[in-house]
Length: 456
Image (cartoon, rainbow, N blue to C red; front, side, top):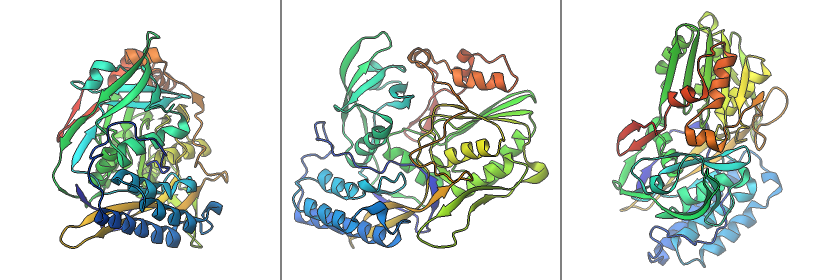
């Protein structure tokens, strides 16, 4: 699959994992047996050089956190000269960036002419990794259920530090037709499983010229099987619950939604699973939910006199009612910034699990090579660290909720949502119990070009 990135630079607060995991390739790779010839090797080296030159010139920290990046890129080139397959070459490029330990600096390889969906979602809940949703009519549906704890993935124990690397490796660098898992079922039994993925052939060329398509592409790479959507539920004028899965919004639609919110006494903004998005969208969220101008963060980067990230209030049109924000381990970047601003400005209450701790400001760089046949690849590169008004960065730290509330394995299995139920109680609405809360926003899956919502 050839992907053309938008030529206009995008400044984004959107999380993808950065660190390449040096895994033994023990699963079934796609194209694992394809011949890796000198032309492909030369292409890989050219990709490495494109990444190298951009990082050395534009990375926000000219000291590279004390890393000798020139030496790392030289080692990566030596490694590419020796590998015998494409995965190894792509891994060498990604690995060159690993010691930067930067959530928003990562390599996007040329994508493949197929979609790989594993058919289940998983996330850290506290310090354990659980299956959170399973897609109907898949191999995963025969073997997994929400509430199953993933003890190992291809032999590696998922942790908060490692999980994003696993997603990146199996979703971007080395997708495969099946993943081997060790799971502990809700009944306590333990099982080793090979869960087969859905494989779908795609068109050879995808033109990505707007943020919505780009966002979907990112989720596709990460095998999140995510469909961009926003839903809400109103309870008279007393309460509105608004779940949004990213900060990639058409501005007119967002302002209309903020206007709807203003008709209620309380808002529960559900940012669980929200990986972030655009800086301008974050500004609009803050401006629509605060009655005063807010400095969200100060930019610190290679360039001097960077302007702070500021949001102008919508004044009399801003929502001034009670605000409760929900986050979890997959709430990242712009979602984390919003939640932390709510805390620092004493605007509302944050509930749920500690957020991802992946908060930088980045710019995408698109590259192409070849003449008759063009190959497109990309680099997301941090341009600034973001320092909050308390003088701290959220990178690697995340947002600790005012009240930590974690669903249990039994809650996940039964579809209960104790976090949302507690939020409704704090908002003054005591008729939403965990069972009813769990039914409000059932899993959404992309099936071909159709988005379906399924209650399981």
